[in-house]
Image (cartoon, rainbow, N blue to C red; front, side, top):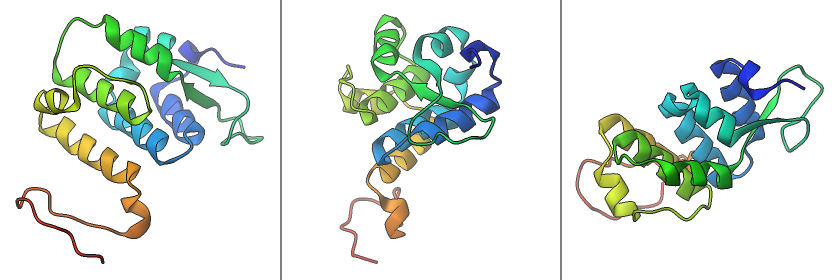
Length: 149
């Protein structure tokens, strides 16, 4: 089995996607993948990610499954003393993965930049299963009730 530090970011991404199971976990993983910043931080990678041999995405290929230890990632996030957009993306991902997050979601969203907001919107839509229903919404056009497609 490889060490997590031996894997290139592209292999981390592939392994995380193969490991994630369920809309919320997939959404949280895709949020981290889309952001990319956290996967380039060795301290985060060593703390929150691990190579596993088994799980829902395991097969006989040479590709590794890379599990996210959401509890360790949450403890890592709790030690961060800045409140920027990058940290907000990480904390939203933790919330999607079922971890309690602070500050509240409304405060986190207020810290996002345009790229982070776009990633979070896509992640929330995935967590809600919109990708399976073909649901599309214009999110900048004001509030309105969506009718079924």
